[in-house]
Length: 321
Ligand SMILES: Nc1ncnc2c1ncn2[C@@H]1O[C@H](COP(=O)(O)OP(=O)(O)O)[C@@H](O)[C@H]1O
Ligand SMILES: [Mg+2]
Image 1 (cartoon, protein in one colour):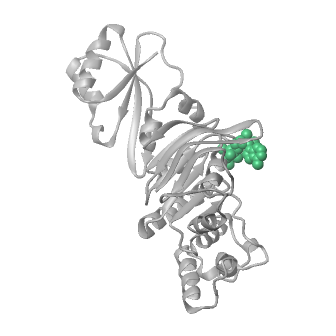
Image 2 (cartoon, rainbow, N blue to C red):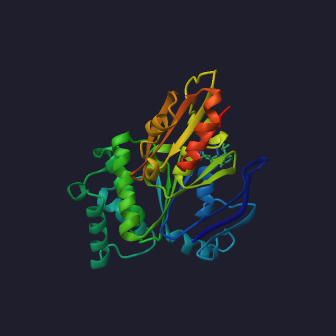
Image 3 (spheres, helix red, strand yellow):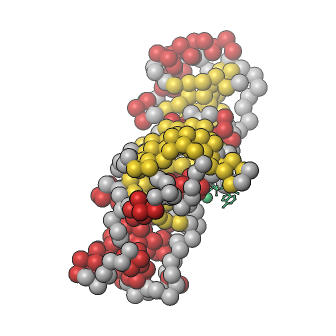
């Protein structure tokens, strides 16, 4: 378990993390989302001890992450694999040797049968058997990131930290890389922290997410709760607009989860025998569950009836002002 308690960090006069408290459970895929400059990378670097922090505590499985005790820090860092946006591969080494690199760094004999088996196994896991002796320059972006993932796993860490790991990749390749991370989470039980500015990433794989703005966690929860029913700041971040809504009557936004996808709207029209217009709608996919929301415009005099009906049908709703 990774626990942050009131973590504060500044670079000279610039306060970058302003009291962050989050808990990340073992085996979880946890997202940290926010705009560029929000403090996401700094937060990740504090977790793996590449940066110090001024106050608060970060513990990993009960051990405090601190730059003061270098031996403990090294042990903690060995248990955290890292993946970056720009892959950080060594051009002079082929795929095999790039994957083996952390072993060399830690003084492990890379030629021992178990090291060779481990490296081969990981290259197979990421689907690059036929590229084993290719140089990074001969690989696509997605393939480079696969090498980086294998490298991050080679010391068998319990935790994988990803800093914008898919931000340089196109949408189709992003989905493949995210599926691979999900597979690693499910099959190997790794805890994965995903730092990203891409909502698609969080939607596809994260079980929980923190929304970070200006060094503060403004919202935390399941991605679907955050994004289907966003607070003002998340809405701004998503630049979501429900378009131009009618200025007459009452606009009501309805939220659907997969359990409430019955044809509530048409049933309501029939049962209450009233007319309304549908102004805006969207469906979103979260880890293969579909959630949606819809804005309807009803006459002011019908508002109460409609709201009562929605309550009765247990549909989540909100009157838009
Ligand atoms: N080494 C550093 N020295 C000074 N300021 C930094 C340093 N690293 C990051 N910052 C500043 O800290 C803030 C947060 O940066 P960062 O953690 O990289 O945000 P994000 O990853 O969310 O884009 C930014 O204002 C950035 O300019
Ligand atoms: Mg960053």
